[in-house]
Length: 485
Image (tube, rainbow, N blue to C red; front, side, top):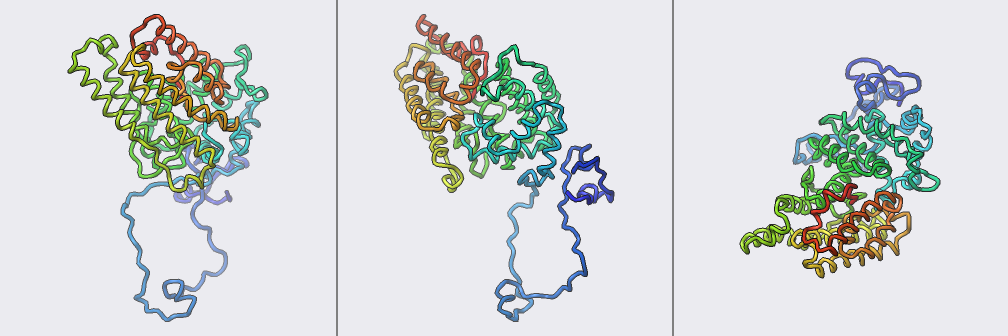
């Protein structure tokens, strides 16, 4: 940025003051706001003579003598509401040199690795590939992170440092427990807890991203607090979530936490923090894929499930026919809507994404719909009842995902299908377990996968032991790790 007063200082009729080679002026840094220069620079030389020209290109090119009353018509926008559209990090004054300065000022031993992971496109995808459907999503995700970095008070960089500290990049695995220092992650968690609810979009986007980085950190280490971290971040950003959703540049940051919370809520029979607001645009996200329009139906399923949670499976079996039909009607309405649901896609889908990525997103949409139907079935029937129908749904999920794992390159196995595979493992254990081990996220988190296996093993032991309850009844006492969507 040239050493000219930025917009803020210019409006205050003051000059910008810089520290060293920093491209952010001291005032903007102190007030955590973009330091940018958007007004046009003064043209050098004598100002041009203003002449009246005919309107329209044809009149000028052909030298036509058009009457001065012939003026072009302009249509007024239907809405007078003003909104700020963030297009890229450059809009916020974040140039490549500024990002380098932000990262290299850190005293961490991983700062050069961190800089490469946030700036180099290929390294960024390699490091984040388990958290997106395919490489076509990488650039928008990278730009989103770069957009919020200057306003995050280096909390995001500290969180990335904590993740790098526990990850063995050479072996592509989590370091052994004796080599891990948990102090950095503990400090980052304190930073997240200290964040208060705010209406600032960049602050809220930073909170949501910090929550996601800390979820990954906890998957690498203790593997127990991820859901609480995610819900705290969503609650902190809840007030302005609709405004975040109106800014497409924040999609890679703002949508994934909702899918995570929805998956956890389905398994734990809770209600997600946010009910997805309606939007007029197509949303194709790095984690949700084409399932954005399915989330409101899953939220409705969570509401019905939570409402019926006070009824035990034995109570359900003993209720009168009238009460049972009432329960069945509640699930039937959302079941009918989920069966009828089809993913909606923008007309440019095949232009924006590769054929493999489109196939992956369609596969994800089908298995999530099937998983939702399987969840409804198991909310109605305890273990040992209706097993044939449950196995049919589980086999459909496994059939879809077997083809995906066999045909997809290893660096594109970050498809978020953990929830469908978990519910499938409870019905057809061997097939689903074999598939889930081939997915990138679970292959690199052996501790998390082992904990899921323990829960599935307990559910199968309960089934063989004559347990007549819903497997949901076992979740709160036996499933201590997060449900990765």
